[in-house]
Length: 469
Ligand code: ARG
Image (tube, rainbow, N blue to C red):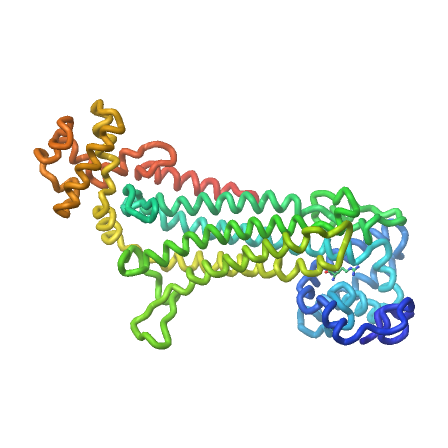
């Protein structure tokens, strides 16, 4: 163990201790291996704090200049991979502070005045997460715009819509894709909302109770781009609800992509044959030469479990923690970082994968013609001719059974046969029984009529363009 404080004997945390921590404890308690990625945010936070300390007369102009210069040097050492991270200095905060003091001397020792690592780390995580949210929102928009391109190309492609994974009613493939656009839109909105609660400054709470120095928290908040300051010092250093909330948003987003993935996997199976993923997005088998596997969507589905796990991990981490800061909170970082990394990688690869998607319109159409997808249309036809819906439902159910026995589609049955199910059926029924007729008739906001789908795409594009950046 190296020394922690200049005044303490080598190996000791401070003069308060009679013996150093063991190597095992040092390794167990250190977080630097994973929290060093907070370094850029830690430095930004420290600089804002130092400038505030100068403004209130605690740090002189020359000390501030030394701190700024030292931090620039540290930043470039880290960027170039030359910074000597040490677990003896526990975490990113102590590593940087120690290096600063080595570089500039006493001015470095003043930096920690009026703050604690407790409010420091909470600030760092919030700065990190704010940047991550902004990046993720941009990635969602990019994916949404791919979806709109794909939807636009396939407005008139008809596929069977499913309920219970059984053929239900025909829908436009573009319409189907727009369902995912809507899910992603809500995911993005949720993140925007979450960002407001992330973007509050904890610094100034110090260890837990605030500080006796005449600090200027608003000044620090403004410099760091926070919307406001955390209003209670105990809450500021202890709660990680903002990280939990982010993970909840992340879990939902992954859940949506997992649903989409499941469909892509099914559709790529030759029994469906609806789509083909580009070779560059698939992998083969080491034993079966014929295989082309949809590994990307499978992994998206799998990684959803991992992100859901991070949400549960953070909830469990916070549960039953007494106020205020507890070391438990050091465990917040790995789940949070991994949730961010997973989301970023998933969104990027997903957008990529969609751009290589090939659609087999004929297979979709054939499947839509197979499962009596227009049976509801026939029932609605009868209702419009005056039959109560339940009677219409019964008449069409009988028609479907008869058609199925002879392996015919409803539209294949001649008029005299159809008339056996209801005398109300006339020659105009065939317009209703076609896939196109079925789609066109669902002509209202949110319906699958192609003109409505086109309008929805235009509206969706406008909503993307008007997103706050
Ligand atoms: N590495 C610590 C964490 O991530 C920083 C705060 C430590 N505070 C303390 N009082 N030990 O939570």
